[in-house]
Length: 454
Ligand code: UDX
Image (cartoon, rainbow, N blue to C red; front, side, top):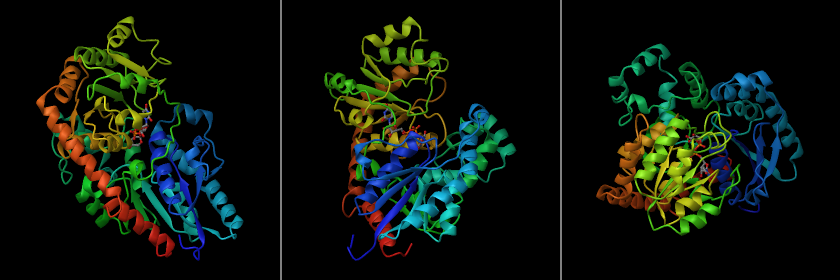
């Protein structure tokens, strides 16, 4: 940054969840490397990252807690909406203090907030600071959210009960079917319509940043750019552009030693992200299918991810027998290192956008088992647009698990999928290199801050 220009600070406001913290902290890292100071303003429900990667960042926590009864009864969507209600005033107070403290040549260039932390929009408007919306999902999911925000809840519910409708293309969103739309397992359709209405309302924001790349979804990005009246900057995949460790859970690195003993491209890595859960019955079907496929597998089973169990203690003896021969289980993995390991041949995933980008970035084909929200959109794109994944749809039964693993690892079809995955990896890598579309987009965004033209 030009020395004559004032050293500038960027305020980031993350959603308190791993899948949102990870990309916004990577964004902070990317902007820090361009010379900005970074302040992260968190709610009481975030955990400050202690990672060395962010030792130069300032972390502030604003007051605002939900009642015990709210915490017990509210679903995830209602929790987010309530958090937005209670944090607006405390955020404004915090920002005004930051503005008072400045004056030593460290002015605030802009506030970048996660689209679900929309309480952050009012204060910058009042203090005449630019604000920027950060979408941690992709442009296609953003477009879907704006469509869903306008549907009639009653009609949509009736439509969705009809299996024929569920499997038909949603008008204007080809190749997405009704069932691929980002409805949520964490709340009612009324809640989702309300939350999406808030999230896609970019209010007074001057720009939107998306953790995606034009080689992945150029038509959705153009559509979004047309729809929003402000610049859209696709600057991803951020984990390649600005890798930084922001894991909220302790990573079990012993699985890397185990992976190092396996043959190249044979292992199936299984993880449902930071929120996915699986019933005991499905755990057993999955374990049987994996065991019958004769492929080694590395499985992340998070504590609390099996309903009614702290970890795996409620699973029957049969489960341990099924995994003992070829499987390795951890509570939380160093996912990037795992995907980079040559032994990994496929990723059975819930298709959260971070996991999807990380798998694409390593050229690892995917088995898609989406659970909720944008994961369904991502899974459809993985299978039918990028063609680097196969969906594991319907009831989970051991036969389909075995078949899908063999399709990916053993069959000829798998070799074609892997080739496409490598091609896509090269494209996304090129997009973040100097001259690539995401690199130029980040440059343009930074330039707009430096020249105060945002
Ligand atoms: C959520 C939503 O589910 C997702 O669809 C949305 O795009 C972002 O918010 P989450 O479910 O946690 O995120 O999934 P994902 O986006 O894949 O993020 C999970 C992150 O946790 C990834 O960065 C992954 O590398 C990391 N992870 C996961 C680990 O580091 N170790 C693990 O064992 C599992």
